[in-house]
Length: 363
Ligand code: ADP
Ligand code: MG
Image (cartoon, rainbow, N blue to C red):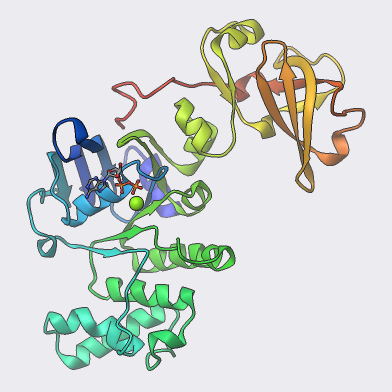
């Protein structure tokens, strides 16, 4: 991750051709009143070697974008460039990409090694080289000693790694992954997140990773594009997306945010615009605070114990509810039904747009 982040922070370094460019990409399914704008004007540039995530709720157009990059679906507008070459109307087999789906179907009657070799066999790669490359990939996904097993002798996570090896053995320039960890239970999924990131770094291939899980996207990616209704609301590093959500949607979808309506923002710090502030930036204080902080009083209407922290919900005079994450041992004198004073540093509140503006979806 550090390398790809560096790629985006050093401006003086000359950038190479992006691995993927999407230009005004559109996909409409059906016609007339029943038509769906699944992808509604997406501009995006993904650099070589990135671990790039498409994050968004179900139905926001992520899979459709991925299928258009792979060539399984033809755009109804815009263009797709791979390594600078326009492939918009090229068939899938003419594109240097491979896809791993959630329901990775391995051939049950073939061994793990034969499954991985399969694509090379189709391409008529000689047997010895086929064998060597398959072994190399099985090593890369840490299944070096599993070559002779059948898929039903593996765990879910191991099967998913075979699917990964099977895609990577073709040495694609780009690997597309559509919710590949969705079928795994939580613990295995977390293990695989770490594994996937390591594998990506080892093989140095550009990964485009689709997920609806914001934690997954934030923890694995060099950059994230947040999708909503077929459009991109924000593109940025996980930190940028989390610390500076640029729209209400991103503020609400990625992590938990408090929204301060424009009239409240006006009253508290003199700016008539909607702002967002993260619960972990808000403290419960005993009395008035310094003028670098904003503070407001309200009635505590819920306290939720999260372990080391508590989440306190406070209703303030205009009816807005604010959530504050505070250390459990800092809650002396705070009780449901009582009043509490909340405070946060001025710079912790960010202006958020109601929706994306025409510039908002651009980079
Ligand atoms: P996501 O992967 O983010 O859940 P999709 O790209 O699968 O979203 O779907 C985006 C929208 O396009 C949804 O409203 C979905 O119902 C619609 N859609 C996807 N594929 C088709 C299709 N083949 N025919 C009609 N509508 C589709
Ligand atoms: Mg999908």
